[in-house]
Length: 206
Image (cartoon, rainbow, N blue to C red; front, side, top):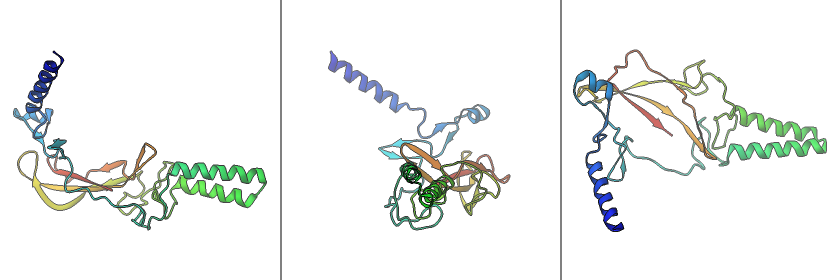
């Protein structure tokens, strides 16, 4: 009886999968109602045949050490910012107990550098642990804004959601994963007025 139930469950799952409304793309409800026809969004079929479908191109993997940090420096130290702050706090405490003023200042400066993102040579270089408006600290940041970037025209086109040739716009996002957390240099995205609602937007993640 248990075996029969398992087989029936598998058959049921197969039927549901075959009728998946998100294939070949997620249904866009508003445009579908307006146009009185199913409108599906390209590149939104999450997985097909074990392959990710929402990624354009292939994923490139490389060792972080000796790669280039977000700020453009060679990475020579692959550690967690939380671990480094904990170590600096311990050094600060030890120096205070010893009355070592110079060591206290050094440990305090280490903490400030981590909080403000002045960590040249480390994997988290540029990712300030203290979130505040640093303005455009990267070339593709909008000056004076908080981690804002503007979509740029790639000069390429592809078939859009309406079946017509549409421009492809893009922006770059640097991500840092550590200790179950994630940080990014892209919090806000400015959309140029020239962007058509049916144009294609791509985000390049590093």
